[in-house]
Image (cartoon, rainbow, N blue to C red; front, side):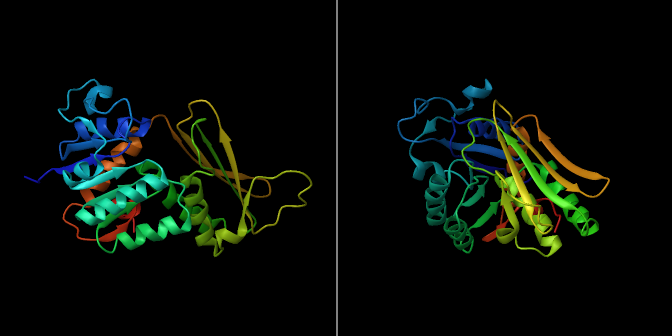
Length: 269
């Protein structure tokens, strides 16, 4: 019998943290070893399974070091500054890490890559299996629609999301740009206003919508003359992200180091 992976969930009282805890409690190959939150949170000391209506026997703590020490793998969907602090502790203790946090600057991404030389890390902008299937579909579409089609990425999220465009939208743009032989840093257009002139064929446009409780909608539009091809993924809940994260944690079991993403986890390389 396979030994279950002991996981520690960061941001335990947040929307995604709660979903991760619920997924961990339902996964037979995962054990919820710890759940932690920021100091001063009103949820410190309460049972981590309370949000899911289950008594987990794991109390939410603000002792990050102890929480990470209790686990094999840390799962983190918090904010870049918090994630990097947790990553430093995971590296110190030799623990694996699954990072779903978005909004990292180049220095943060470099820090993750550096840590992955010492510990195994899955770092992906979106852990949902369906979204990662879309990444592969976009590779195929971009190779076929490489001439005469304008590319636009449209994404929508809830009013509480703090970064834009979303990490998933950016990854979609990166996938398409790579297949088209373009550099996203130089060809991306983030929103338009005023007299912008005609659209340049080599650009990839991004449009962002924020409102209500939209979990996450992403569409990549290939607009040609006389036809449009749209590849869309819509999330009805955060559970697909949580379930994918459990797969990522299981994937890291037994690995000593390395930087991976969900394409590796799903065997899509």
